[in-house]
Image 1 (cartoon, rainbow over the protein chains, first blue to last red):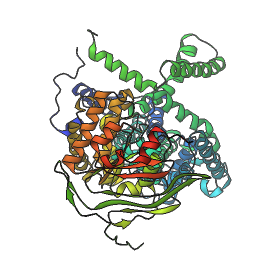
Image 2 (cartoon, each protein chain N blue to C red):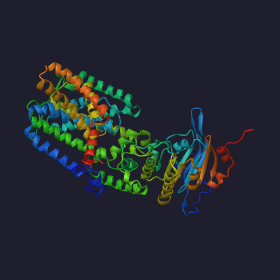
Image 3 (tube, rainbow over the protein chains, first blue to last red):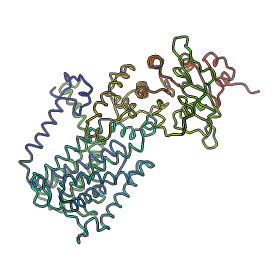
Image 4 (cartoon, rainbow over the protein chains, first blue to last red):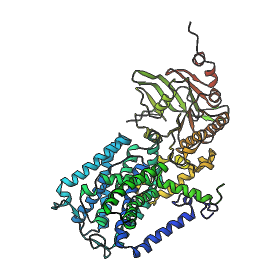
Length: 358
Length: 279
């Protein structure tokens, strides 16, 4: 009744291909953006920034990246953790080598470096597919983490083997280092997330997206209608790695402040991002955000319920939390294998007909 | 590679068909094609040509090598012997995506649509080779990207109107019934504005009405856009009605070539289809 498309006419192809064709969707999106930029920064606390919003935004960027590769282009990757490490170490090396340049530029450059590394490790995808490709990208994961641990140049020969972000500011605001305020952290991550989501949407709604999806759905037919599989797969790896690299750089510079390759960017990270993409919904921008929100919020929520409300001991709660998250993932995949994005689509479909479904 | 010019094939002078269509010179010339898979010879020394503006059928019993022939034409199979000449130049061995850029488009016997995409997006993929905007322009939806998208959309909408599939343009292809999928596949091939359109069994598994619709579309495509069409089909009625010339294959050999009437009265063709007593 309220949510409907009747009367929402399009008179040009431009209108018809926009991101939110329905006026109500568009209004909702603008409202969400307005709240995110104009309200949240003023009320955000350290707790909300550090345990909820900042990790959510950073993982959403990583999930967007992996979703481009796996959801849109159909190339399975287990190397996300390794690529995030590339982003983080690249940002660290750039920030320490060129301190006069803004760290925000370093973050973007780190994404670019990750894109190049991603293309290199994406080359096997020309020959192998599916599970075999997943195993090949697993090699990237282990090799990259090993590299950052073994070669002292990457961590500037620091005694601990850790990388620590120098304090940097932007327009007078401290945005990295221990002195950073909650709202600054949040705003930096929010800007990157919104910008990159917009880029991802532009790429996936146009020619590039169709090229990727053609390769995903039927690679032989795609080649026969004129898609060059090499460029299609390599651009997917490049764009995806760029996103993941930026996420890794933000994770290190803005969120954690210090990192150590095998601890911060281990195989667990790869699986976490992959789960986000699968639970959120393959081939969906919204799904990347939903999946990231689900996997970031759920442990926080469970901890609050188990420890805060029920008063369980912390260690018991921590173990149970893992079990519950795991069980919920399985439950979700059985109920809706196409993820939260599909759930959202179905809800909207129902809402359109509500309250007269026939 | 130096493009070699082609001598005029015999009888390649343009002429007008009885129903008023213009048939031009040779568009694709297949010369002595032999294709082997290991020990199996799928195509044995076959030569024929396809002329501009004509509807050329390839027929034959199951396993005759028709689809293999089409795969040779679209560059998907590389023949061991023989040459493929296209638009007066010998086509060197190249990857299928490059062949597509020369102006060849095809449909498949088993529908090869992109199931996860909408009908509109599927047809838009037909125009991928014509996109000029760079990755950066597309990422920022800026410069050529948007104008190009709308221009291609306009062309695609014309094809959607032409094939009468307006009502399903936003439907995911996976949800469509078989007959419509075939039509969408034709639309995708047409979107590429091909010089030569190859249809591999466009009417397989259709009922009479769907066949009539499809026949009408094939004739209209040929008539309105002047597209040259190569066609594999099993329904003899359709083949004889639609095509200007027919190639008949059996066990990888060419056993007949000519107008539908010539082929219909060819003893070898009759034997291949009806069987012949060995005594």
